[in-house]
Amino acid sequence: MAVILGNCASNPSKSIRDEALQLDTVADYIAKARTLAPAESAPRLLHATSFLIEQGRTDWAKEILQSLNPAQLKDAQFARYLLYQAKIANKNGEPYFAQRYLFNDKLEALLPSLGNEDAQQLREARATLLCDLAEYVACVRERVALAPLLSDEASVQLNNDLLWDALMEVPFDELTDLARAEKDRTLEGWYALAETAKNQNTSLAQQLQNIDNWLTMWPDHPAAKALPADLQLIRQLVDQQPRQIAVLLPFSGRLAQAADAIRDGFMAAYFEARQQVGQIPQVRFYDSSAEPATELYQRALDDGAEMIVGPLDKDAVNSLLSRDSFPVPTLVLNSLDKPAANADVNAISNLYSFSLSIESEAEDVAERAWKDGKRRAMVLAPANAWGDRGVAAFSAKWQELGGEIATDKRYSVAANFSTQISAALDVDQSKTRARNLRQLIGQPIEFEPRRRKDIDFIFLLANMADAQQLKPLFAFHYAGDIPVYATSQIYDGSSQTNLRDLNRIRFTTLPWFLDDKLDEKRAITAYSKVRPGFQGLYALGVDAYRIYPRLKQLEKFHQARFHGATGKLAVSDDHEILRQQEWAEIKSGTLIPLTSSTESPSDSDSSDDNN
Image (cartoon, rainbow, N blue to C red):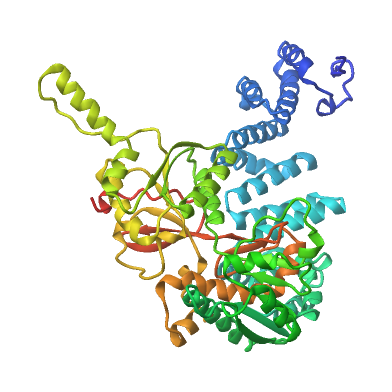
């Protein structure tokens, strides 16, 4: 294949960075570059490095960079050298090494003097990395610094959108503090707008009023010239709010207590909304255990419902799929079976599903463990359908990320947990090897059993009672040093103290458990007969009320998020409400929120565990 590599020696005006490179000739290009003096070879080798990174040949690119002497590079070359080192580190799953390169002290001093293109690339790389590391405030600052370097409208809009996405990850209380303390006017305006948008305890009408107030105060701000798209839609949503909501729940039978908890959460949010600006819909409850779901649904429509929440029972939810259409937005409180490939998408365009599914939590665990640098997992789950679903979701996501499953073990609540844990960790095999060795040599030997060494962490699926029995057994069987990750089921909210049996477990959990200041939570505590095991369902009821006005907003803008009591919520292409929960850890018997995914798993002494 003929490729023009260019010859800058004969054509000094040609930019080396514009030269065309292809894999079948790049080796010759590099070899020729290395015959030149350092001042001439460095730009060519950096150009080849950039090309190889784009082609995914990071090992080759790294070899070239290692041959360069950074001290001999000119300022712009040194900046590119660090940028390429960071790109390689990122592609190799080493974001913290990338951070060292991109925030090098010398590079920091050079940034203001670099050319526009180099400065843009570095600022963009830094902003992207900071966001990936969940350092959202620093990411916002980097994008504000990047904005003046951008000239075309599309780039400016994209930068603003990404900046807004980062702002929406910053906790509301932190945004409030930042807005009050910030001296830079551009940043102050962004923080103030994000505070308004993030305060989702307010009604849509109140939020719209707050946005209009912000526009009056900040008419020349970059965001005022191009308001984030999800905020632009709010005015339309306010005008389309339903005047009557029907809630279909099974108030008798096996799900009656669950229905009561969801109802109490829903009404706590309803009464909180009544204290704010805007139209409040009439709410009517229907007992879905009293008649078939399809008939009840139609009765609610005939009664004037413009929004329907429920049903809850899986069979009732699936029976609704027999309908030809859903005339009003319908939020069922269970997962939907996937529609057939030839299903009429328009027929279910108003149908959404919202549940506390184990699948989404298991996927969260996989993503978090991967970000924490774990690569080989031991899976420990109950031998039942719930365990199978959680493990299937975790395994699919974990292997998609590139992780390995060292072992997948199931435990039975009917059997001895200690025996099962010993077998899962291969401690039994260690004891067997020692016994065979004693028999072979015919005399006693000193021996300490060992567990398998090929595990980075344990993914534990268990309810709170089982987890309190299982976790101490890890230390007993020589695995007290292995980090344990779990889903929210290990903590049911029944106590925030005396949790020592769960020490050092890192788990995904509902924001509901971490925020005692929620007005709805206080109302339920004050006026309802609180059932500790149903705390998640109270939160589900709260979010079912709070999210219904925003379904179209979340559907239209996939980057939009609603920060609710059950997690950070989004709407998928198939209308499932996706949840990203928060993270916590049990330390010294107390529930501790983990505020950043950059935090490493607890390295507290394993003596904290019960043995």
